[in-house]
Length: 585
Image 1 (cartoon, rainbow, N blue to C red):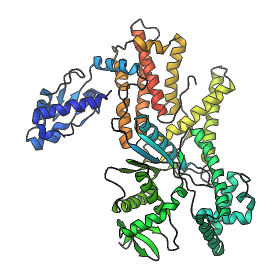
Image 2 (cartoon, helix red, strand yellow):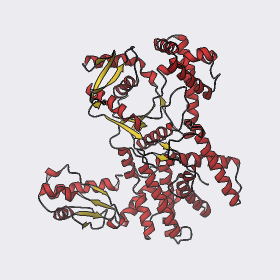
Image 3 (cartoon, rainbow, N blue to C red):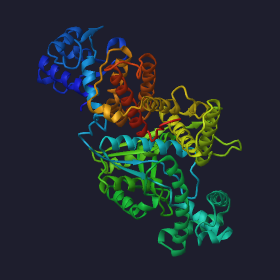
């Protein structure tokens, strides 16, 4: 089913052509959800934009459009307001018909896209031999949510984990371990990941301070790139150990990824430089091969270079990203490339993409997007750190969320004099704790920094995961209390909207398809969070004002179906955020 918004746009398209001719065939009808319920459900703002072209007053143009508009099956008679806004209010009968269609469909009557694309999403991307920390949280869950939405819409999504598994850091670490703990380069898992991180820091310190060590590290990189057996074996051990640690986090967060680290593109790097040279884009600068950029200058106003081959013949992140971009377009057939990284990498991507476009590597029909995000802050307003000033390990943060959730649940059980199994308590604690962390992040506009607060994100009230989960649990409680089998009700039951609260809830239930379209375009998961939060609020108002189990038929069945549809919408919406639901809390 096309969304209500799509249907209205199509009907306004036809009305504009009927009123003013084929010259206006491609005019955006500018139909949008109403900014205020008192103006109806949707409004068309096209009349103002056409005034100059048609040399007429907007209200007169709006009148002509309405005269040619056929929306009697959807709306009450449209009204003209202000200088020429066309306000549209849906008919209750239209809402009822479409709610009945949604009830019977597993996908809630949301059709797959008519234009599926091959989409590559690059997200998470931790570094080998380092632990995932709170800085990886946003990329991981934002990327996963966007992948889920696009997959649900029918796009062919490749989820790529571009891990840092190559380069100078490995020469540095292997060189240090040869001296300090050679067994770690021969035997799997003789060090835990925390020890490996400590050795990495010590290696970095030596690299920065000891020229002899720095030279040995660079030689080790050359050996690694040349395929030296002992170097490759040591590198593989380090990679495998880190992967297992990463997977613990991914399993906990229910994240699926295909690893394709920097090393995957290593053999392609000479070809990148060769091709740029053939295209006469390269210039030598202090022994390095560079592409000088347009629009990027230093303090003296001189153009900045993007280095693609260092003076020692080595390559860098920019070279790898150029190779990865070409591979994703040429070999993977991607029509949309989405990179989910912090805002600090915006200039890097802008520079890499400028070079790729000048080289002709990004066709016009390929969209390349940087999905940037802000910082996670502590409650002091500064970058989230441990008390000792260290970056917070992601595993520690998630464990604490689960533990706090468990403490809250056990306290509530005691207050309610409820007895639950350990299995129930552990499962509920994990779902609520992890959902709270995910939702607290995703509900923010990703472009902004946000303050991380366990107390706020675990609250049962407000725009939190527990609040949404509780709305779902409420419906399941109704089913248990009334011994309701919703599957049977869906077969023949009808929704009839009489009460204002029923109507408000029913209208909102129709909007999910439109919201997902917005998320897919703007790549802002918080739009879906806002929708689900408003849905929970509208449902709670409906439930408090409209008796369900005690109502007489056919009202009872109608209201039960509204409850069921709310729960199914919440479950679907939350699943697209990577959040599971609970039958009880």
